[in-house]
Length: 142
Figure 1: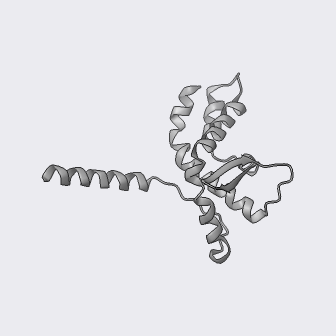
Figure 2: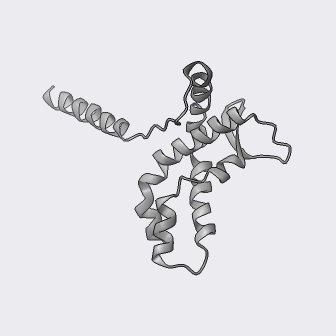
Figure 3: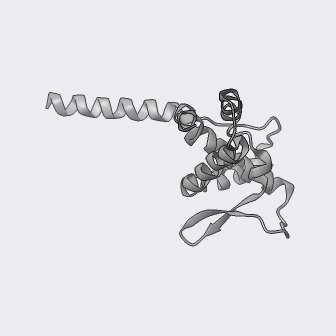
């Protein structure tokens, strides 16, 4: 039917639009042989850690801005809401039976610099895609 075809076209168009808005970060140094598999490994964790990562990023905003703030403080922080490398470094992506989870790193963190880099990269990329697009809504809460 004509209506059915129109609905399918609209759904495909919306799917294309939604996919086109995803941010993909690439570090300055990227060695395909060394980095590609590790990057893809931690990218798979992204769908499992969405809520935890959002809570971490937005919670960090509330903690950083504090109780007494100016509108400029909020805007300055929200502008860099996903640039929280120190916070990413304090969290680890662990593969578990049903997927992945994000946990705080213990004091005996034995991740290699390479693993830390790509875990942080996956978290930052996810933040760019699920938190940053809602910066206006986050600002409105203040």
